[in-house]
Length: 293
Ligand code: CO
Image 1 (cartoon, rainbow, N blue to C red):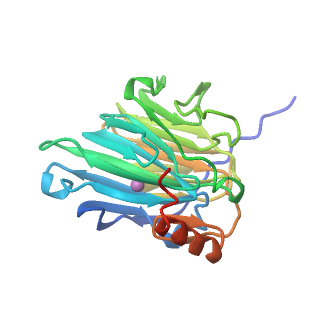
Image 2: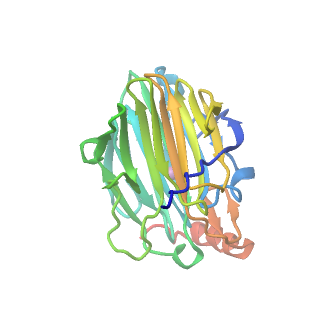
């Protein structure tokens, strides 16, 4: 007779409270993942939450600005944002939709709220590209809310699968080619009743959760849990095969995990490369108008 060894849960390593800041043309936001955590959470470089019902907090949006060397993933919970870039792409991101943009060798784009009133709420995650892909052709994809697969678990947890997989369902994000496959997990988890949630996670992948409604409990072992309170990011230790969460009805949490690139990270504002020389090249190329086709 054999017994299956019990799965070990990933434990909480660190709690981080998002810091209020402003970016773009005065957009009020909460910066959750900051530069000091880029190595620890490799390949993730930044996570911002924006959310306000006062147009004064978001009205100016993000006028023309450049990016090079990484990807931005914008997830709109509520509101409308118009995206326009130097390659002629245009899209409207709204209520529950996602924009996945690969800046690659360089884009100049604007991200502008397209509403005069009402709530605007969402997230922007920065995902690093490996050195070999940093100068790839820019690419982007708008994913409408209805195209994001949703699964309701038997326990009553609604899981929106932006990227990666939950149970046997794959996420909405598919690349044009398999050149750099998306092995990033990005789940938006809604507890519709008091319930428990499990997800298998590769222990080598860096992972974190971010509670944006209510409070999430990370179950570490039988009878043992730690809270990730509202507007907190919980970093998970790289030990164990699964994450186990528990929360009350109404709680919403993002669960994000990715395979580390293990490359040097050099950042100068909206440019993220491997070396300082590559950053200087990025600034020079931008100044010489090479980001505009
Ligand atoms: Co941008």
